[in-house]
Image 1 (cartoon, rainbow, N blue to C red):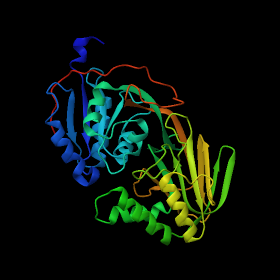
Image 2 (image 1 turned 135 degrees about the horizontal axis):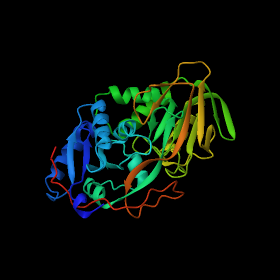
Image 3 (image 1 turned 90 degrees about the horizontal axis):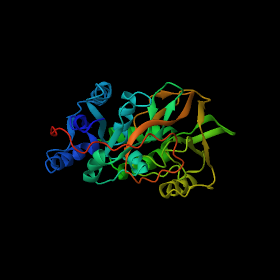
Length: 331
């Protein structure tokens, strides 16, 4: 690619206006005014989740001389919507500006929490491939977690509370669910193991945590070609409360009623019927039985040049993104 062509390329940033209950985009508007006029950023504000997907898909399907990358400014839900829009093995890399209430995917990628640094990373970082989760071989993809169990109650509290989304609200909602959710009998299988009993909670994660820092799978990696499974079986409420406090710290391995495993695939079946899985903190919408698979190296993302991602799967060719391009179009 010649230098003259590079100067005409740009990076589209799709902003989720409801990220962090509207506080994130307000911060970005202030930051946009401080960036150099030559920054190759095109700002577009989405009107809905469907519109966000359309804007991402539009950038990816544009001609090869148009966009060098597409980014989302939001949280894990915005990344999930971008995943739904991008083709598997995306033609252009995805950038993430973590301004949501839960930014666990960006955190595991080593993307700076500071929005200014995250914006600069879009032009200074390098594309590398990371894993994502998927329902079956051709179903919906997710970046952090698919969960069954008490999240059904907790997410209902979070989404209908009318309060700004934050980790404190997630903790309160989880505690409410812990004392009100009635466990379901599940049959869960994975490579080399199985579990059948009444379950309070089961999460199949790609990242170490979700929900703004619940460290469900302390050993997870987005580059190991595997999903991490955490099962919390039925127990007394006080005992479950103790388990919950360990989960908040990521120290629940070896606790009673806790099963941890790694596998390239996991199946979940509700023996009573009716359970649905929630993906990346959204309301449950994926009916069981279901099979969850790791799509190894399924997403190309823009990462810091020295991001420490062990066991990387199928690395993309390292190339610098252009640092000079068209004037930004402020949102």
